[in-house]
Image (cartoon, rainbow, N blue to C red; front, side, top):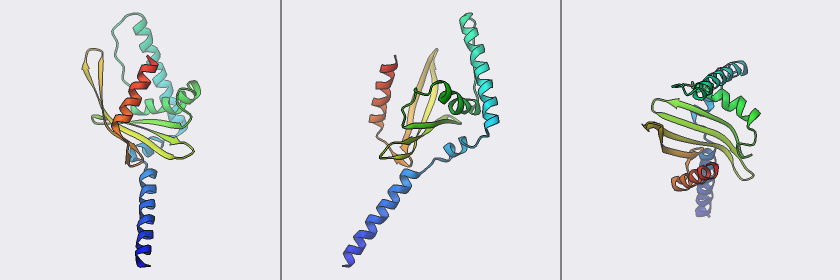
Length: 165
């Protein structure tokens, strides 16, 4: 009888641990969701003005450079993406956000399907490898705190890039 109690306790502990691991929300994601609507609208407008100026410089074949803040990028993701590009993301994906920390970029979104609900996120390094050549190295890909198989993620990214090009 005591082995049955031990087995039941271990099973319960495993279930609770799995639930906590899948329910984990990375702090950077929680922080990026903490903006008031007026500030987001202002940041979105700033980003759109800069993007329009960039497009005009490119059309005129002038040299150009552009920089966006994390707040502006998240404003675009929070407001502009769902308004103007509603069908761009799969229906299971919501509230994408970005965080810029030192030499790392963090991307996250809410994921919800019939079987699973949580935060899907990744950590990457991005750098200029040469003129007009951007390099990306994925460091982590997680669902909550659970690591996802990198090979499968890379295959999916490759497949999506092929489909979009």
